[in-house]
Image (cartoon, rainbow, N blue to C red; front, side, top):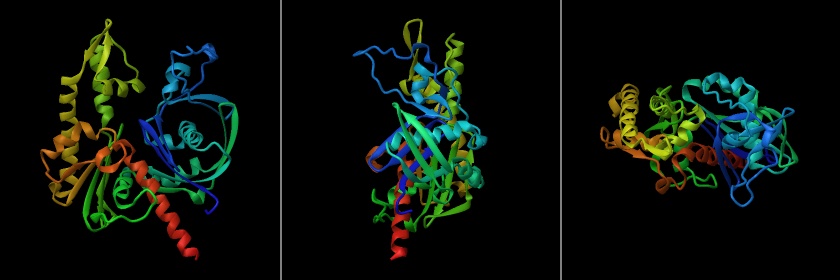
Length: 342
């Protein structure tokens, strides 16, 4: 692996996160065949030009937010079967193109929800191989050997983030010696990982299909009741803004979001109690992921040993924590392999 390039790719149901070298990048996990009806037009000086369009498998694909302006029919798959689809492979190809502007051999660290972790061989088979990707008119070639791919349970990266520095070297964190519970609130799943001295405890590790998507559905349902249709891949932006446009004005969602957050927190709290002995089986509960800000305070009200992952505590956004930690873990493993060869 000495001549390969390390990359961490978190192919989330809602967002794909990428970490490679000094590069951090993320985009919504939605793709579409490019609609070239308005190709070549841009409002020069008035609109930003950050289009993310790649050529792959003899088609041009709009990626992430670019789907809104360049996409024909948005594709977004949240079911675990997505790891065997072309959609999943295109997301992976886009992640590679976002990180490398040269021909390289790649060593990826990827993750899967704990409940789907036994699918890791299928995942590796799907993303391994040769990639030819065109971006901005330039063709790049990436090679991803099967044996270079490492798969970890989602949530593990958050613990690694606090145990390893950006170079992959061990810090003075005491997480190595503690019973830790990770609650990773994603878009379509909330993942629970119990670690004992940084080893995964199977009986305390699980995933549930309740996460931000529950609130997204309520956002869309409420908007529909007001006569406004919001597409699935647009719901997260509406949630983050806390409003949507209705008859030329901004319809606030603040009070509704607070109530919906309480309902989601109750579901998550119930699983914590079931998995972790009422919450007493772990010394620390780290709440992370893109949805952590909606439920962390509510969980803290039940358990004083809940700690929310924030940019202030981790130097990265909570939705980046798993990806960043996996990258550091990859660097740690590279150092071990180099040491073993000496």
